[in-house]
Length: 293
Image 1 (spheres, rainbow, N blue to C red):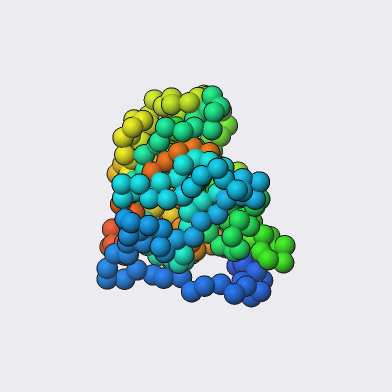
Image 2 (image 1 turned 90 degrees about the horizontal axis):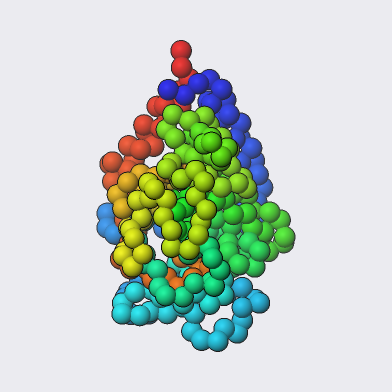
């Protein structure tokens, strides 16, 4: 059960976000998000990137070849430069399911292959450091699959687009926050929240794995599910729940598949209506948020 302190923190966080978000939203022409109801949405037709937009940061243009495309019915990001493939539409209250597999190309460094799924992406294209959009990243980097990263950006007038979430976290021996159902409520606006079994001391060297990793080995497909229900996000990797946050802002937006100098393929992308089980995750968390007596 949550303590009174946790519940007070939640009220403060929500109030601050609503004030900032209201001021920002009032100045924006934001597209109406789609909420899947009754049937699954398949944004990818398996032939081309119709229904998607793409972005490459300015210094990576023009690329030497086609950076984003379709190969054998899969979305193919070659790993040249940095940017993303984005759904043209925004979404809210959905269960995203997608599989990914690494290609041959890396960024040439000694460190892990890196990509991510950016949720609730908001604002102009490339508004976060000319590379991403304001969003909440679900990390796909090797050994870090399922970490959350808040990415703030700027609107067309230069004002900051607020991005934040709260999570129950514990500190490991390295003092890094990891998600834990029994942890203390902590707000995240800039720093990374590691998935629950992110290995202490993991050095993030190329093609290495943490001892408790649930992602598939190199060369195999990994299933990632992002359950976005109201102001909560739950992430599953290969069927195992690895991270969860709430008091999320924004609560809707485009979905981005990240290009971060590593070749990667995506397949079986689908946006499903929330199931009763998905909605129950929020109900259980809200019940836990009630102060202990």
